[in-house]
Image (tube, rainbow, N blue to C red):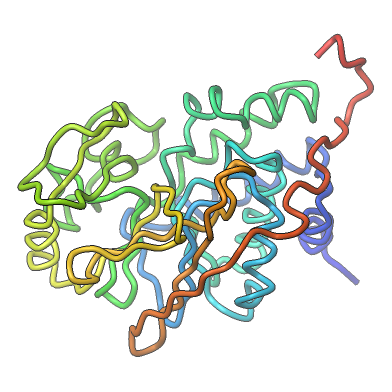
Length: 309
């Protein structure tokens, strides 16, 4: 007989919404797991590393189909589960349900879109209002974001983060010391971990980011960080890459983007990185699911007429 969490996973895999009370309970359970994890969460190999998903539920299911289900293999997600796509609620709830079902087999890092401010602009807020007729689900989900770990460290050698190196967090111990239980600030170390980008030309040091938030760092910063922390690689997400994947700095820094045909119009590929027990990195490229826009207009749970919402 299926447990409640197994039933939730099955519903969400089918693109169905959970009831509001079940979302609340799920967010409470996953918060209890997140709070036990560190700002630099230790990750065992082998592990499959996944970049931005952005509410593209059926592309997430393609990843599981291609690489294996959570429980059978280990997963590390680099953040940005919500916004832009049509199925942010189903996506984040599925990942939360899998985290509750297999807490040691899946790690969910925070991205810059796991934020109250950003979700009010780029989709999750409106999706919750449209599908549930209230903002309760948005509150449950966004409160849970504050508890997510910020970075991961695979076998002490491969550091994983959504954005990049922060100017005033030169050591992993600096990251460990941060208070993450808050909304993403608009400046400072926590902000920069989730917003910063690597330079692709010849920048030295740090400069302002064209995004208007965070900074851009050069290869010299990368080399110093890797040396000072005795690591070999950095895996990060955060940037749309047409090929799905990009390697910089003699392949030491790699960007993974896992939302193919981003926003249902960009035409880009997606990618994941499979890390072996020996820490070899294998890149797998994939294309958008044929079902990418399935159930794009999901009915809401309550019976309020559309004009009331």
